[in-house]
Image (cartoon, rainbow, N blue to C red; front, side):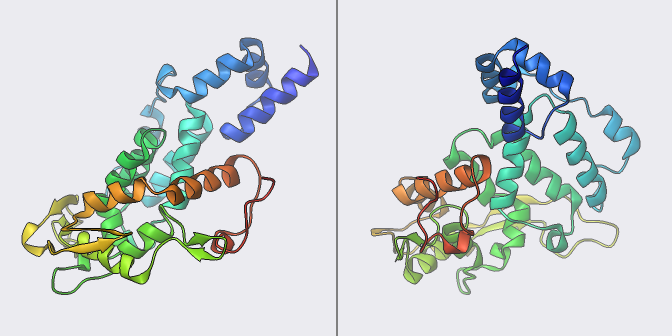
Length: 275
């Protein structure tokens, strides 16, 4: 087998997954580059990793305090899953849609969030960002559970625009204004969790997303130049049709899979590298 075929396949498997053994590289090279690429891009064509071994050695895997077991299980999946690109995309979204166990304090919720990235991370971005916006862990992590019609918390609205979709800007210009942040935050009032925090004495009951219309600000809002009685769904629709969103996500993908770029806070001032 030609060395260049081995080198090319090794490069593909490093970039699209978490590496491979020599035997795995040779098997994929024999299969062919195009077929391997098709398998990576269509994870449903590959078997799902068996979790029996994980459950055997991590019996508290799905319990609320099981963050260490969740981490071990995810690493096990990264190493062993045949669906390598799917798992690498899960890590990609976890790095962008930042949430941490240090605040959420629930291995179960962190596991659910990673499972969401795994199941939907290679699909439609509008669907993914909606699922993120109804993730109980994310709603709590970015304080939307503390955002009410009469007392708006802007944290989720700001992070949604700056870190999760539009990005701060490009060519020294901004992609949104402070008024857009305020309108976005108002639109997401009433997007909350049930049962409410704090956890119960013997462990938290699993959270579920809850929309409370009585706590939602249904007044008129102007967001990115469009005016209406926007809800969170409307905000996501407006975000997803912005060219800035496509540029921001494309730059993230390039930075993650192709070549290192400038630090994200510098993107408004620094053009993409190697383009």
